[in-house]
Length: 224
Image (cartoon, rainbow, N blue to C red; front, side, top):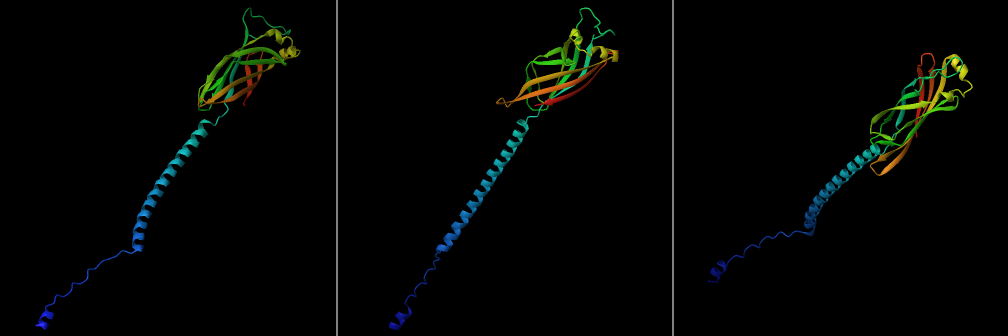
């Protein structure tokens, strides 16, 4: 009986298998998550830095384009002199009440992205170092990246020609050497905040042929 009972004893169950994760495995899994998050953050930071660099480059280009002021240029396109006639004895031939005038075709070229505004301007004509006439240019503006053309009328005083000692010899040679000077003071406004002062100067040598009344001019313009 004892043997039978022993043979019928229930066999103990096999112990359940448990897989205990070590601290190393936990750290490895958490480390993988941190690495993924770190990559995402790096990508986000890289995108932000790239965007900021693009904005900075565009800003620099805009500033270099808009704020880089080039000096406008002034040019004398043509000159004509009307009703200036002399007799061989050195006197002025009178034309009644008609004025003796010098007509000048002047252009101002503005290469900037902002308009160039200027004030009232005077053009002076010299003969033998004597001012023989003046013309006035009213205030105005040369629009951005445009060329402004204007006609300047200078009233010449024939009596002042008579005060120049070399007039008689010039009449005999049938040629008068004159000069003109024009100065234009203006400003270029930058984004309605800043203003840059600009001065345009032009000196011209004018040769007037008494016989044909033809005019030759040679000018030099300067922007400051």
